[in-house]
Image 1 (cartoon, rainbow, N blue to C red):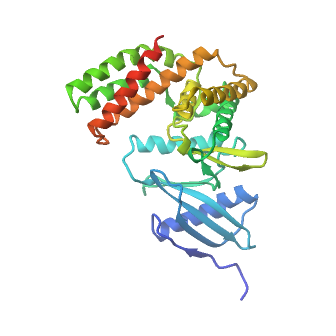
Image 2: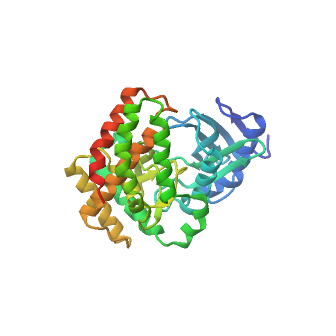
Image 3: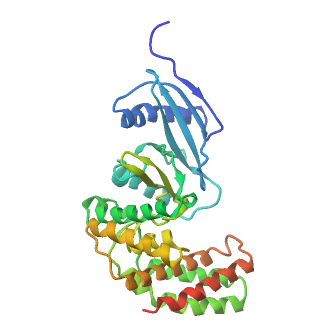
Length: 343
């Protein structure tokens, strides 16, 4: 029998029905495959399986074979299915889509290549299709890869500092201004007040120091911020030039201080390792045109953002039903950090 190859679809448990699967097939043939191999090709077989690296949102590995036998894999993120509620979900998904489409989706900096999207507000269908990156989460890796991740961060910030490309996506991004930081303090107050007056009083002692640092945090040079640059959101794989650092989950991307992401990356390290991470970051940032301040200033800013992280966690304590003992541990951590942020 001759003619066009038959299209086969093996449907694993996945969102949507036949119509949605047809949309995915069109996206693969019209966008994802051409972006991957440089030409259009008819899909001969496609299978979908749950991604083992899924975080909050449902995600899948989409395996494709085209008519000439070429095989490829894509990563599908489904914003319509999340294990826990997300604030402003529409804003978050539009932000991540825009970041990949318009800023980081070429794959030049190590991030996953943007391959396409199935996007229909009326049908509540929002799928992002990316290059499938084989890698290991940074949290499972040894120190030298954390140092590589710090270098990557410095290069990223230098690449987009003052860039017209960044200016084009700024309307999509969060802004780490004084209002942003103050709002986190108010949320923490409301959350901890659900526990006990004694815990609320301890929080006020911490917030006195935190709120005094807000002007400093908000006045930093504005760069591209990942927003959640933690080990679980950084894949380490093999690249053309060696180690590939591939941060994922850009829903909280922002413009803000260079040290916001650095603080997230290095939180918890002891001084010997911490200084190696800072030095690697500083060298890469300087090479990219962003000189790093003296170590004492870096330490102050990193500690300010470490305290900010505690405030954010306390702000979600009541909603996430942390036990009182968990709130006490966070307050104890805040009480250690608060004296370090004198400005």
